[in-house]
Image 1 (cartoon, rainbow over the protein chains, first blue to last red):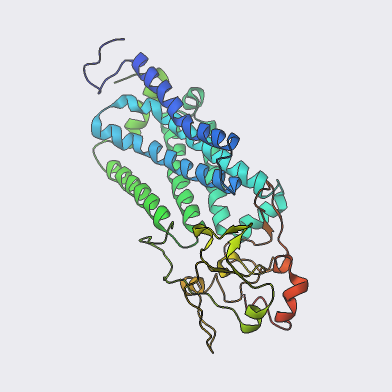
Image 2 (cartoon, rainbow over the protein chains, first blue to last red; image 1 turned 90 degrees about the vertical axis):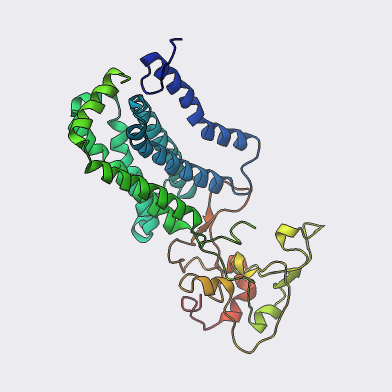
Length: 224
Length: 140
């Protein structure tokens, strides 16, 4: 393994190894749910447990994804951008399990019942909006789609992740019965990350330039 | 207990619950000291709790400290916290939705899929006469 003199610039192979290790780490919540399911550790209401766990993991991974760029701007570790897609897709992965649990185990794929829920329950509408917005983001996450869209258009489309996170938190607020502690904490963290982005938007780094640079880095696996 | 001392959003303790006299005198309103042949565990409301099976679970108060007979209908803990969503009677009623979600289906513990909620939790034959003539949408 090549010696690393500083964490600011890492060669592609080291980044690849870090990415692989983190890939396994991010799989841990899913693995633990499977393990708990098989060993009867999901409690008295397993569906609610899985739905709640995958819901908060989705928000956690959205936060991690939104933290990548502020973190790399502060530290200068540009290779972090190589991890962002993986974190974002993991958010989509846990969101998908969460939505399947609702569609299947709660509603038995009854589309009429789901539509009634969407129309009458704002919390379901917010949650579904959040997930539906994630679909084009997941679909355009590949290198080929980045090339097809071009850096600037890809960046504009993927700004929708802010709406995904906000709609997700609102969904959380609207479903708690009385203890607002957790939605409040998530709101503060996501709100803080959005403020950080706005601050950077009006700073020295103009977004268009970064979009092109980011696109190049993501495609060619550059470290620096 | 989870959320009992939550900084944001907690009930106004001590927990208050109430029943109308005829509801309390009904044979299905039970003071429970045990569960499945065992002495009532702490988390299930030891030493004594009330169980009112035709109402939503929060009416079945745990670990009763005192019982008072009052003339006016009391404001129970959940009703005080959120009067739009929680009422006094709280009879299980699939026809009347909670403002934020439906109560038409329920998942029974041990089962995977949901089933239709029954009026008065299946005890309609035994208790519906207590509410004859009452608008259950108004007195939720």
